[in-house]
Image (cartoon, rainbow, N blue to C red):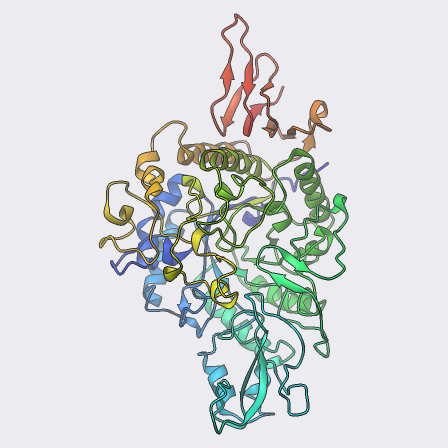
Length: 584
């Protein structure tokens, strides 16, 4: 079904890439917030784990209204995280260990504290400064209504009105105010959307790319890569878009099952417009000027997969996260469908498939898969919500991860998943920081629960997150048993299982391998089995153990396997367990 790229020299085609969320990875200075020196101090952990590259979520100068995805200066490090010199040291130390560095780029919007937006507020309507953003006159007799009916992904209207004339500020309703234009923000009101039909905006971001490429970064993960370009005229649209649930419309096309669609794609006149591809063709040319196979990675919530593949055509981006795979239910048939559809769509454009199960925007899969309905996709979990089964969730998460790592293509890991970390589902509301919680008036728990500072040492204050024991979000008591130090060197621990899997994946060259379904299980409702080179990847998603043929060699298992005591023993794979076998 999939023949693989052969022995491609391009590292990103089969890389295992580890996402670091800087404020929650490791704290170097004791203020309770992770930082660049903290990351540098833990590079040996990542090298030992066996990852090929690290993706750093934003560390740029920012007022931190959306955890750094509201950028005020794209060419500087926020003092919360360190300095440019700290970044240079991190990059050098990572490269010395054979680890590449991908940085986050946030081009759809800036912070409202960015110099450009401050200049736009200071300038009058119709100025070149305002032309960098999406300012519009309002509807209604006096412009009192927003320019259209779009809603923010974080909840509430996607437009904020400012006072008229220069030196504008958001309208508060105070006496004497003269309301003026409105500006668009698909996310928080502190994140105004840029006007990507403006050549000045395009030129600025090409220069931002060059700034970091000149420093030696190996690529960029592009936030909201399916955004930026809006439909001409900004037409009204009656749908809504959420972080994980995708698009909801009055009349929704559920997508063709054979396409692997799960409903996670974002549609509407603000997303996946054809004009966005011109931007990525230009960026591809910029990266091609540099040696080392620099890569562009699309965060694009787009379905069907055949449309997502447009982002990774040969002259555009290099990878695109497969969110259809992330959102597929824990069931053999739909997983088989999404895997086949993913490989088919990407093979048609000569691109690798980029697999992912968790990130900083979704409930950790160790908890998501422990819900009574493992196909649910909540935006966070409150203490009063139905709680995940922690043991079941971890067992399924380990099985899902081993399945993912056995697939050809590139795989992304989210920090802490190698420890089996669950979501924090009992955060007090008064410590939450995600704007999605506030803009939905507390209807959504938001993403704080997957962003908890990591536990490094079980017996230390703050579980060793930093020298002071402080943590910017509280850690659950359960983190003690997940700490890295109590798993390292322990056979069968989640950490050692990941480490063994990554070493075996590399030795067996599974990332650049082939895929064919194992005929005996091709239509099974309980078992998903595939052959990648000389390795069989078998996941038992059913209730009963799967008996393997005599004499098979188990290379890696996500959990304990059963062996009978007969003279010619047979291996039994329990429920919610994945094994890698030497192909017969």
